Image 1 (cartoon, rainbow over the protein chains, first blue to last red):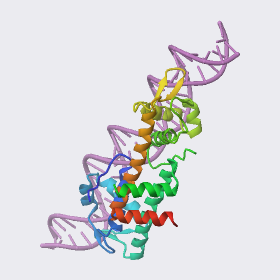
Image 2 (image 1 turned 120 degrees about the vertical axis):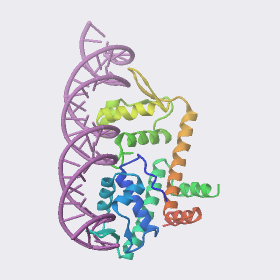
Image 3 (image 1 turned 180 degrees about the vertical axis):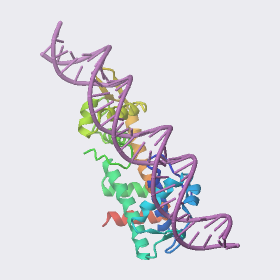
Amino acid sequence: MPWNLNSDGPIFVQIIEHIQNDIATGKYKAGDKLPSVRDLAAEAGVNPNTMQKALSDLEQTGLVHSERTSGRFITENENMIKDLKTSLINTQIEEFFKNMKKLGFSEEEILQLVKKYVSK
Amino acid sequence: MPWNLNSDGPIFVQIIEHIQNDIATGKYKAGDKLPSVRDLAAEAGVNPNTMQKALSDLEQTGLVHSERTSGRFITENENMIKDLKTSLINTQIEEFFKNMKKLGFSEEEILQLVKKYVSK
DNA sequence: ATTACTGTATTAAATGCTTAGTACAATAAT
DNA sequence: ATTATTGTACTAAGCATTTAATACAGTAAT
């Protein structure tokens, strides 16, 4: 999955979301070592400082932790990863419903629109 | 509907989206006069310059136009408003599906999750 | 005529994001 | 021991966003 960073918001936020997705979808598993800050930065096409900021922000959620000089690792806590995935899903659905309701649709109408989209 | 501006992105972009929603949902109808830049700014709680930027950006889509000194008006073109609504709906649905697919779900699985959410 | 209101323009300052360049200390590999 | 790699820290610059404070010209209302 390419990084696909755009200018819709701060790059470092998009990076955080991207890595969260990679963890939630199992690209990175519990205990895995992440590529180095510099490698990730090169891969994403951003400045190493930007990647560093994204990673140290991610750190504060406990999802990843850094081993001072040997690298950065995904949490060993599998439940935390499971919760992350649940949370990401809920965030997406709630955001979608919130926006559609702003456009004047009821939950039932939204469901119909989604059905129509899938069968199209 | 309150403005609910947050720091997820540029304020002026959120303002544009908010006004587009107001037009799409019929709060403002074809030919309606908009409140003045200053009034809208006060209502949204932003600097008049920020509102001015949002409005002049909106102008370039043809959705609104300014009558130099008498005010700013919604387009008379009803089709343009209809197209706007369709476009906003499609954007929301496509964005939602794109994000859910990033999380590893198929269209059918997404539909099931939405159904579950509605009946909850 | 005067007053209030309209969109618009301009300049300045503060802030946050991003890039750039450099440096240091600790570990791993050789 | 030496070298490469790790996370981390720091400063500087450019840029966009936002706020602030004014100002001007045209229209509407009185």
